[in-house]
Amino acid sequence: MPAVQEAIDRMSFADKVKTMEYLWMAMTAVAEPDPPAWHEDVLAARRRRVEAGEEGFMSVAESKRRLYEEVHAR
Image (tube, rainbow, N blue to C red; front, side, top):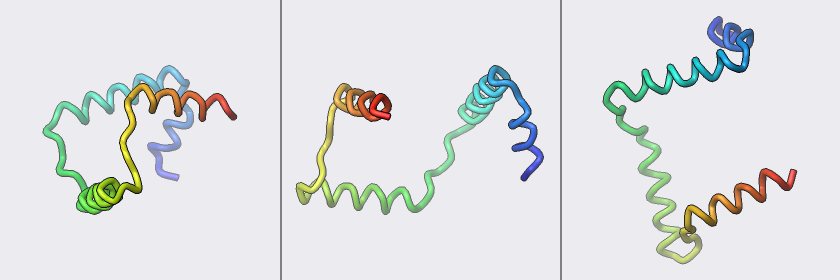
């Protein structure tokens, strides 16, 4: 296991949250990287399924409702 993973495993929950917040700030402080090439393939496949009527879109409210139900069904 890499040393950084071992260090994270030893952190308290609060320190893990602080570290995650720091990493997020550090990542967003620089210009956004180019997305990986496979993103275009995934988006194209999703577009084809939507155009074929095999998939569709839902509202944010519907997404939240479904996620809530899935989490609380466990």
